Length: 343
Image (cartoon, rainbow, N blue to C red; front, side, top):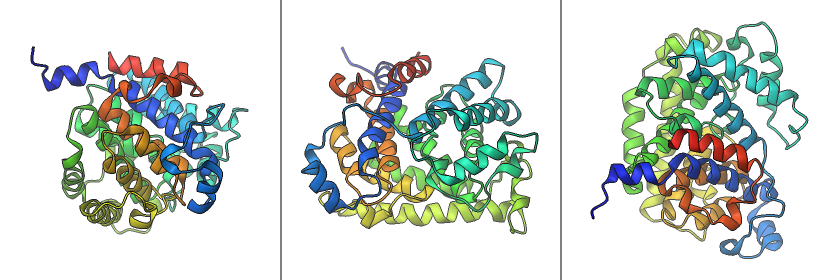
């Protein structure tokens, strides 16, 4: 019997695979963050043989991914997803994360400052850190790419809005949109070989499109003359890093630190590109992709969590051996949310 692409998309459990892969990459990269590659090799041995730590503890990357996922689930239970319906539950989840005793995994300063300000009656745009494009904007956005049934505008708007709640720089918005787009395309069965081209086309198509219904007056907090000029700055920086990614993939060098080609990942567009590079060098070898991402001199946990989300969206839940997946922190909630969207 011939298996159709749509059938494979349904049965592979892309949402469960992506959320699990994100958390596994996060846990694998947690001990190597802030280390250079020689130090990582000295501590962990050859990168292709890196093992998941025991216990498999994650960082704020996974915690905020779950917070966003819960916020989306709540918003969609109340009706059609739009900006006004999404803001409140996600804002509440982010504030709850900020106050949680489990928020002790070296979270980024931008998230902490913004979430403290979100814990007030002020408009969310006043809490947003307008000059920050840190990878905290898109390390948590995979859920937006996994929710079924959204229109292209809903997916784009939700991705940009969740980023803007903390990271208001236009590049953070564009990189988050592209990250969710990549996860969505892979979950729907797109071939990895054409992914970068599709993302570049998407960036060109959206370059001057400011999503007023989702972002409101956010652009007025920057110094751009128009909302279109504001958002174009972000797309242009993402297009530049996607060009670097395309160049790296023409002659991939898997034994070299991927950060040398596409950046250290501390900022959103570089986290996207370097996470994609690690995945696209090993699209059918998910553990190898995670290990390469974790053995980097940059923001290893965020790079690896994105690589894991891409690999899991592409291959589904079967990508991850149970010896790893069953040990990951927050396993129960990751599986519950994944099953909701896989259904």
